Amino acid sequence: MIRHIIKGRHILELTKEDIARTAYNVNKAYCESLGDHSFGPWEEAPDWQKNTAKLGVDFVIANPGLPASAQHEAWLALKEAQGWKYGYKKNFEKKEHPCMVPFDQLPANQQAKDSIFKAVVDSLRGALAIGQG
Image 1 (cartoon, rainbow, N blue to C red):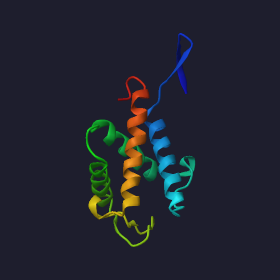
Image 2 (cartoon, rainbow, N blue to C red; image 1 turned 90 degrees about the vertical axis):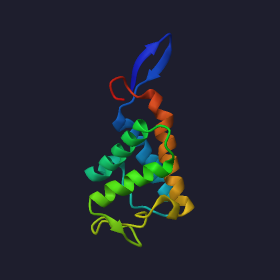
Image 3 (cartoon, one colour; image 1 turned 120 degrees about the vertical axis):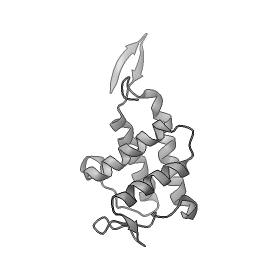
Image 4 (cartoon, one colour; image 1 turned 60 degrees about the vertical axis):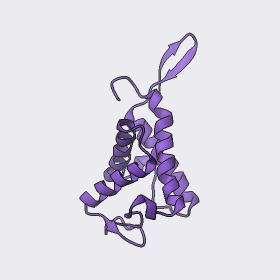
């Protein structure tokens, strides 16, 4: 959404949900490139999945200097609190996920997923609408 035009230049202001949607969609595309097609479109994603993305955005914004590994550890703690556990294959009904391990035990392609999510949020945080930070 374009909120302001200053001297012929468009200034983009995003909400946290805009940033979460963008990070989710980039994450979805990356996962699909790895053969993981478990993410649906943002508009059809269950609320818990959208909320996980929004909480990830909140974490990155609140902790700009922390590495992607810290974001994964925060995600891991959240998922454990919600009853998720390690599973060889992602299973939303059983709350099982193969990434339910410490960051240093993740395969490199899964570590990259956290780095990509953080990079998207970091790159868009400057466009965060006033009052949304």
